[in-house]
Length: 592
Image (cartoon, rainbow, N blue to C red):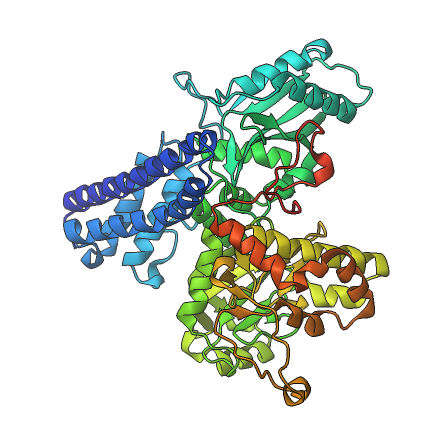
């Protein structure tokens, strides 16, 4: 045991070193997020993509640096538990006036769990529960950058107010026709408000930073009149002639949920107090979990932490049991779920059938690719966890048997607890093959069109899904089709799209086997047809809207455009929402 005064001193020094590690992380996070504005102004789309990928790696790098510092300076792994208890208490004291306390607590957990044994993963030593409230932390008279700005227009001054709102962001590139675009915005706002009585509190609240993603900048706010609140967003793009345009106006919770979808890349947004941003966004999307909002604004580790707390709370208040997930079983993934919880758990199997030439590390690399890539609303985000503990009493016997048969290397038992060493968690969707089986004719038509649009959006993002079977896609509650099986994805530019060669003789023509040479990255789109279009109702819709997906020229053409440096447009709203003054960029595919 350390003497008490040495315990306190050592605990404070470690807590301070830990917080210095977090502050360095958040400073770098803000710097690259703030620089998104300059990249947008320069139309540096490749730079924006690189920054997006690199920022995702920031957190783990800073955690590693902090853990190494604690080991080298304090021999942290050898310290008694009373010192670690003091570390947490001192850390709480250091966070009293901090502007990102919830994220700093998560950073503390990440570093500490690298050093301590999992038996110490409890609230005495880590933040199982938050210790610092994030309510009203932005009330600071010296703060010159509030989370949002409020404007108080009259019906006659709406045009001038929206002009002021847009100009306040100080974008260096001029608008092609800002006055005309604002006229479209005001007309849309008046149509959305309808015949309304102006209440005393009529105002427009706008978050102080733009949200950058892909090739767009999004202004986010809400209109308040009496008890009515209308969320809205203005997408700002580069027009065909080089200047800026306001492309549309999006209204309401459903539009905002699609904009902040779990199937899209994280935004770049500069925030001093992320909790205040999340609180504002939550007022616009009350049904969206805070965990998903933190992830959407680029703080995916905070989102992951909050998700796990929500998951533990759900377990505490439920009694159903984990089961093998409904649907066709995967060849490389064992998938299970808890019926009352809207997520699925995916575990990489220890062995695969001969037709799956892959490895565990290769599969993990595919999931990392998706995490770092622009998911264009068509690839579900995944949460990756290590050493997840489950109560065996909550597992169906059939699931335990499957895990023991296919994933024994990933399992540990400690009494009545089953620990899975590595697991992915994704939002649960209805598998598209099951949806089509039970759907009406109109639902089939919509789903098949969505399926083709999903593939084309993936093409725009330089992704070839590999296995395009219906079972690898899901339908969200908004009717969007999303891809979620990543073990065979490739960059489109790494694939070679070919037509099937004409047979040279009758023997080749009658052969049931592939008689022509196929290289590892060769793809023959016309061979998709027998696997996808056996259902006549499906075939009719597919051939009407997406027959080009069976043509190698479609794929090869887009590959060549991407290799030539084009970054294609995929927007999180329908084409009919676009203002008529904003022409569709020539590089655009069907919007998501």
